[in-house]
Length: 115
Image (cartoon, rainbow, N blue to C red; front, side, top):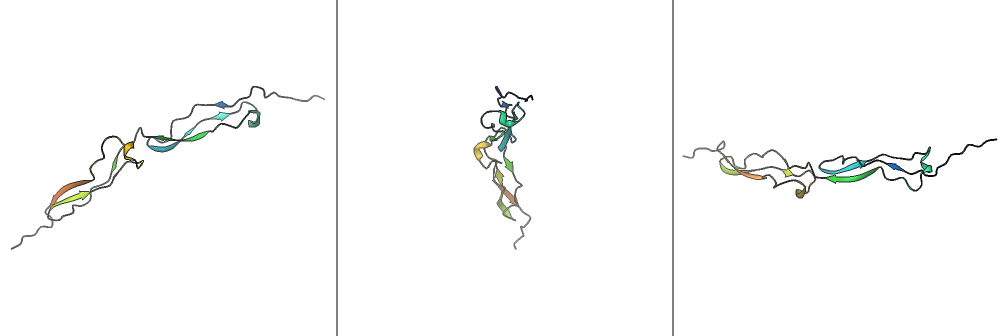
């Protein structure tokens, strides 16, 4: 009676390079392929290396500015406001200075003559 045998000597995890981060602004994930050349993963020694890990990138972060509000005055000088944010919620992740969040305005639509 013959018994089949196979050698697992020299089996080692084959690990590819990490793929780029899934996000170009903020938290994301990097993936890679990990395989054991043997028939089963148990043929490779030690624990299987991670196939995913968290990552963070700011290479494409840019300021996001909302629409200006209506003027605070209906007759004369007033101001307008808007929401401005960096997608990561961290100002240092977006380049340059934040766009203005408040500006002056002048409206006459609500003005009336007083006699």
